[in-house]
Length: 407
Image (cartoon, rainbow, N blue to C red; front, side, top):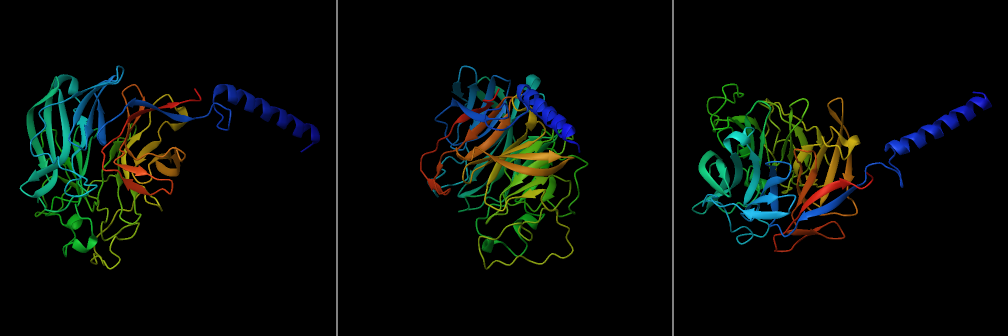
């Protein structure tokens, strides 16, 4: 290339950079690229788990400590909702510090404007046993009425305070998808046929239900002995579900034990492998899973090499961060993290961790109807300088709004 051509290309490159800066496409220091910052909307929440939007200005928030709130996002006011079933586990952290019980995910019916129905997952108690339960109810002002049980993940088990699952999402097919954890803390407690692999056991599965709890005729078959409603098996502790706004695919997060945290695409009839297959290790180094040579396992779309404890997730479609559109945002409890998962041609191409200098345990990231990005934090455990978590004994948390300071 001649010297005058080199000079021409340099001038053209500089001009494009200047134009790009004015257009907001640059990402370096002092430019107009994405610069997410947190704004506090609500404080003193009791370990919030999920948020469901009634409108762009009003939402419902579930708290693990048993509270269900109706929130005015503009006025920043909250009202407690009555009528939660009496079998809700409300003594979390008394039987065991860090108990995973309480209220879990909440979603509104796709026809909420007409029927006022909401759907809740929570830890239910029967005698000394506990398990995951899903209900629907009508939101009548600040009270739940006409409560109906859709799913009880029996058996009720004693002295097991972990991995309830409790994720909910409505698919584009109008069906309700539900995650149920396997409930075990230690792999050595697995029966000969592991819970998540036993189609006769309701735990460790993902379900597909009609809005009234009935089973769709086109659900995949897992054999004559399978419990009704199964859509996928081999689940350890999946908590979050998200629907891709363009393809309609459903994606979910999964907790490993020692590493092994995953992002998966939900496939009808799939077996995600736990505990026979894992991308991490086992809590018990002496555990040896059974051999299942004739079974096809579905590998994750992504897994982390460190512990993330991924929870709620959402595909971003807002206007605040144009370069993020179509990306998946995933919140994490361990170390307090928020991740942006970049998709290219329908597959995960790269992953970026956000707020690395401002860590807080993140339970749920969500998008309001107008595209505003929100984050729920849970400070029952605090992130220390070394990245480890410290149990505080005080349920807490915030609702944060994430905005682009560069705009």
